[in-house]
Length: 348
Image 1 (tube, rainbow, N blue to C red):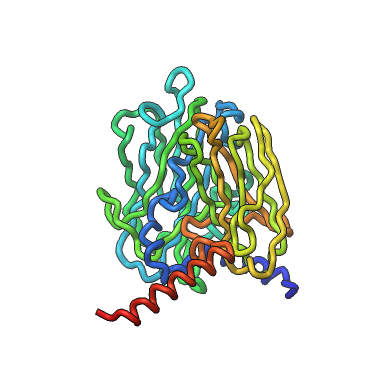
Image 2: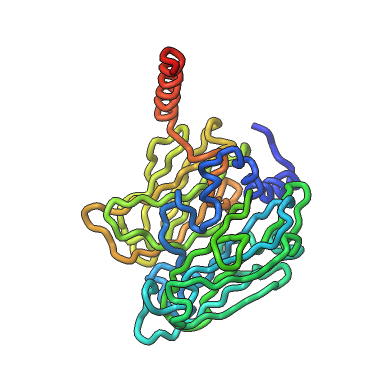
């Protein structure tokens, strides 16, 4: 296996989210690139609690960071839209008075992504790196309950420019600054202030997901970490799963390898070997809700590291497409070949 210098490893850590440009040939998946969470992930809401909340409710640090990648070819302004940004009303998890405030902040400029503190799962150090472009704090506000708030417009060049990868990066931090309620929300990256119109070639990445599982028994959520060619093992870290079913990994080599499960208000970690045929591709980490004893309103935190202890980003759109187990892929190819042969044999 190739040994990497420190400089090369730094470049790898930067390029992983940038590799989203490789998926532009997957036009079907690209259509789902703008909502965060993406449709393929099957995650109904992101979750951020107020800083007085209990961690046993499923948020370990009351803060969540996402990165928006915009190609350098984008010339028209962009907007960052937040669905249901207030805390109270229809979707949010409220305990007692609706007293929670959530601050959404948008960063661009030098360091917004490239500062290593920004690429951590926890709000420590200079995680607010870059230039603050805008921020707004939301409490309980019927105006935004089940509605949208739009940040922007921003010129693409307001983001952090990374010429070698053809990308501008923006950072969005949601942080609970007051109260103990859970704010459930989603994002949409748009070319319109009033509508959800996708930005061609964009994507999103995060180093830790805090999200709401669907309540439906047997539901499956998906996260897609990308595995570079230097990775030989990964560790998954999950918090407050409440023993709500199974967690499993699907890849070219793994049909459903099970991961260790956390219970109430604790972390569980398990190590998983990576084979050469799994490198330079994405994993499909699946969260499978219990069919027999499903936990209602279950929130979970999740991040992954490689054998170097470096955090792996999750891309809203899996690089290289959704991974398939080798036998499933073979069957799919056989079916495609059969359909192609039938067309050739029976021309219209």
